[in-house]
Image (tube, rainbow, N blue to C red; front, side, top):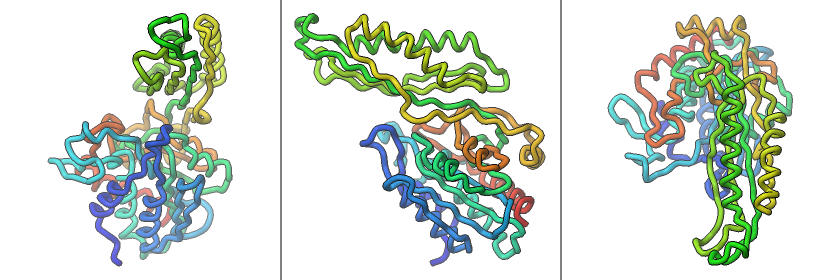
Length: 379
């Protein structure tokens, strides 16, 4: 069967759901997505391996050529959950709207893989002096277990790695860390007509959220790095669940939140400060408070400004390498010995939102850029 054209590849990937989420009812396997990629790359002569990291959660590594060094083109195969009712079109169906393609993951970041395939398509008949590796990971949008597993295995990949996250085709060489945390409060349910019959987990959580907002203000006054577009650390109260009926005192409440520390902020010190705020609340409300990380924290990332990959990317794009506020899998690829850079065609401003899009004008420049990187590192 011939390799599908670029748009058809992307449409097929968008139509193959692969949500990763901390909420089990949303969470899905990504196996079908990486099997599609392995099939297409296999048709181009890549040797493909699929590694199951957890049941239904897989990484894929495709290799063309052999030897040390070479280039890794990397991305994640999962998407965030979506609010179908807020989309103007079907999120799982690629649609062309004016000067853009629209669909879940088209920007962040399934759209990167067909562009990689398009870039390499015209080069596969040439001898590769160094290998080209295409990496697709699982669960980047939640636990980053795919990239973590690779880093823990310690198997060297390539000399350089480019992660196609949405950067508007501008190279990114540093980003903040990511902490995803949870607070579980166990109170005592009871009839709402008599507050003395219970201890409200929901009211305790309201104070806990107030304490987090106080800490956020404190950290934002203490820490600032002008290299970032958002120069302070951020803390987002992401999702809350609790109670079951208006006439019952809420017996249980859970909060999940996201904290983005700047380089130099120690996650364990931040957690100690949070615990220090929560303990008095538990005593005052007479509830149990359990606090801890949802996942191990993602380290902040920085690639040296004078590294070969940064200099090449700056020359090819015409943009100085910059920083972003969001986290990526870059520190894990860096741990495997790759000079690492984040550089992709999408725009982060539309990621994780209804109507996520990829501008058609970015397609050809991205393919050209990827070909230039492959020629430099592999041919």
